[in-house]
Image (cartoon, rainbow, N blue to C red; front, side):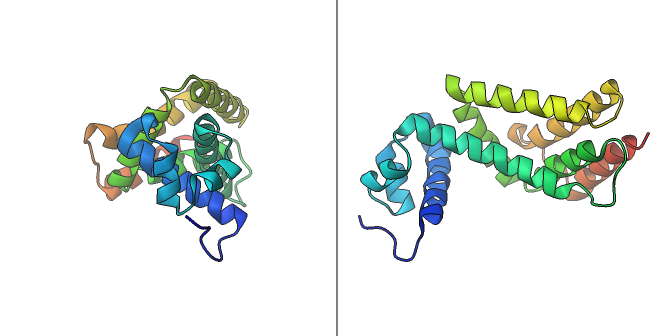
Length: 184
């Protein structure tokens, strides 16, 4: 299969990561590199040009998801908010707003569940969680309050996996209440 015309290196890499996410959601981590390459519109050799093997591809997929979430949170920090809890507020908004599309949230949670079965992925996730804990803790809120607000937001974002689909209004009200709690 030839390279998709007009697609640059970064676009091809993005297509491979998106294809890998679809394959893992559908087949778990046992999905093949051939499946990923086919979905991305590249040859298996083209895939291997970007990622040395399946392990590297799956780790890159995890890093991509973690970095995209971090970028979304950092982009959501209000420019005019310079008080304690500004990062926590952005984290809450992004986390809960991500649950508004229950089907997309379920797909993302299923992807995470599959990927979490890989030891190296667990290491990446633990490091990312440690980093978030430190950054959120250093955001100036009392530790107990920070832990409560973040846990509530994380829990709300996981509701769709269990079939619980609060309305967009219910999620917005929860988000707003949690954000309100951070103004101490």
